[in-house]
Length: 174
Image: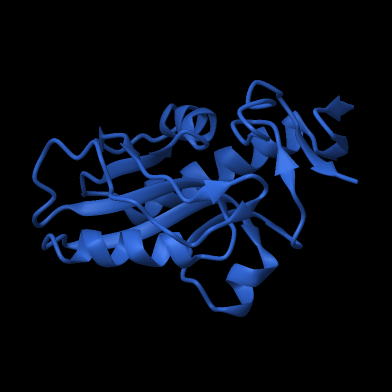
């Protein structure tokens, strides 16, 4: 499949994604029994993953979307603008950041630090995908759907220049 100047091939099927999302939700349900976590999906990429995940969360929870920007083209710039969209106090709350992909982990580290500075009770991360560079740096992601190498992927919310988010499967360049 061609998107702009890149050729993409199937990588992770819709069925595998749905199976893994259900498994992640089951683990979160067990870990947060008796708690009321606040899910913070990071827009734009995580919206489809967050929707599918949160529909399977059985513990009481809140959802508040936030947005940042750190990408230019196909590589992470590592430059985080501010976290926008926080409209409620997160003081003494259990936070679960919902990410589509953890690439280098630089932006995620900054988000976690910013949230911890607000007096949160706990901050954990659930990510559909975690790339090799983030694993090498030991970026703490408690809940990971799929470990991947340093590939450029799109689909299921992930995009290439705004295109491809609507694809049901995940594709990789190459």
